[in-house]
Length: 289
Image 1 (cartoon, rainbow, N blue to C red):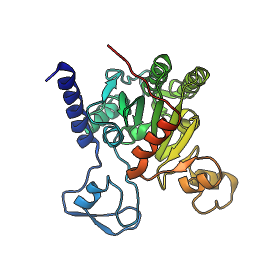
Image 2 (image 1 turned 120 degrees about the vertical axis):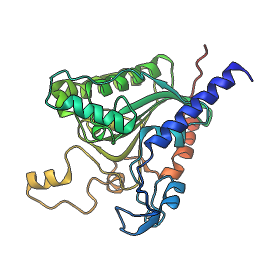
Image 3 (image 1 turned 180 degrees about the vertical axis):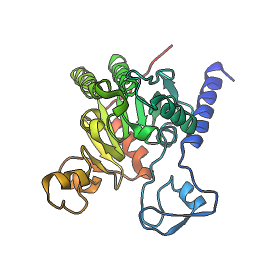
Image 4 (image 1 turned 120 degrees about the horizontal axis):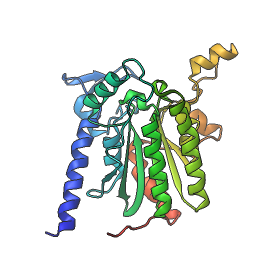
């Protein structure tokens, strides 16, 4: 067996292991109540359906490695910037402890995974936020990892795909977190000027500064069914304007109906849709060496 094949197998084993660790934590009993319909769902059925409720279609949030394992070709995962992690720039009370807890709980260094991989044979630069890591909030490190991925894609003329899942800016890093909105948006502007192709996939939830920056700047905007997408949450908006919001406001289907999204795509169809988009746009490169 060639060294290339051995390396590919090792990468796939690593992704499979991390995907297993980042799949939703299911209680030890055989059934659990769906958060959406409230009905009991067999644990095996939930796993077999990629953590989508087979009764009502509710899409459970999933970890970044697991999400990438659903769309990338086997043996092609190559993680980037593994050692780029947050510190405590403002010496915010208890922040280091929260970071340590998040790292132990998820096995991740930061709330985003960035990587190279192939989807249907197309080489892409891909990133996925993980809501289990401090709600996928945007720290200086997370913004830097996303920016470096964008720049890598631009330099190597690769399509860019980002899966967003975030509660917004990370308050423990203050202005250093907020400035990542401008930094990622500027990187995407440079990427676009070079003719780059960017697919943004919004998952539940995508809110705050992530929505107001790189998540909303894709050439193609996709979302999972039922995903909450917005800047401020619906309760905050209702309290601010003193009015009741329309039914389903800020949900993916409502945003599709009002022109914010290009498509709402179920999890089991997403890989095929991404392959079709890459094929239609003729995007996909190769990096040698």
